[in-house]
Length: 438
Image 1 (tube, one colour):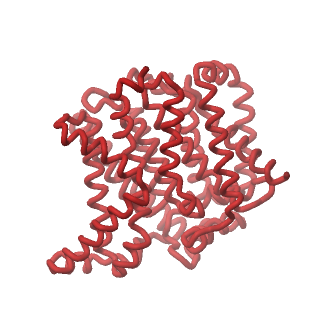
Image 2: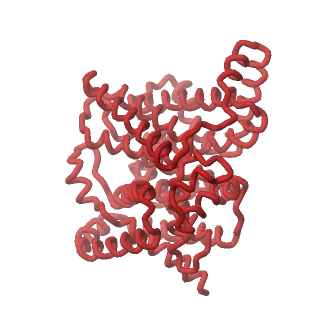
Image 3: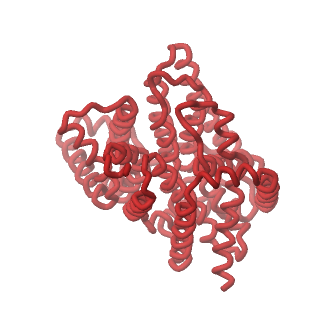
């Protein structure tokens, strides 16, 4: 009974702390944009990302986890009391059925994880050691002394430790509930892109997306869902952005700052940030000076990560089994090039079967090509990102010394974590089906 209470309490805590500091009213007044109106689900999603940034900043000053948690929780409760009217007005405009469905989905997955107490390979051997650094109140500099991949970004481990440390029963899995909460919130957020009057269709779509993206293996200590969910949130706002006419710099900065979080989850997150943010800036209608300034900001953000990890944590490195010499020799040798490329492409298709979201994504893309329909500007952006995304994934495996092993254990997860970014193709196609608007 106490475990059930602990799980429900953890959900209530999430609902409270992620209601601070933004409300739909604050966001709409701040961004003052005519192209987009923020709702409660937007405020909740952005509050989660705001909380992640608070955790990231405070992780470098070695603040006590109990102090951070209690302070943030108290602030959130006080804020909810004083902002009660704003939340009440916003909540009246939302569909209550979706909210209760949101709660049911979360509780169901929480109980599933509580009944399947297992950490998979990366969870135990890569991330848990980092989690224990923060859980045991050690200094962030101690990360450089962990046995496996000390250079891996630490934000996911920090949040895991934070909620584990401050859970009612102190069970490890309660810390990982945050990953589930962010994942489900992002699914509910992106499905709000649909112009559906019938709530039944939206619930069916949410269930469908959860069914084809829910992977218990990845929730057992892996960080993939953090990138997957953050990219979904970024895609939400990019999909509404008017590439030709919008010059709302606040909205542009919002998109960049969401994408930047990926740098602090996994090494490859830096590549995703650079590709997706640079292409975004290059494709929007700004003068060259503005583009150059924002591109410089992207480089500065990357350098900030480098200096923080190199000179505060004390370690910054790329995976040790990467070799540019291997890449050059494989490209020169035509036979090896074809063999490796064939293996990569074959396992990409296997991954598409394992994670069928990719199949669903490619259906509307291929359909438009065959029907000779034009892609709008936003769709072109996501298509170009997809091309560079796949090019990066293919190219990176040519640099690994242990090619076959890395291909076997990594490719499917690398494909999964970026798949959420391209969910927009499904939603655009569904919005074009008149039957769903009735």
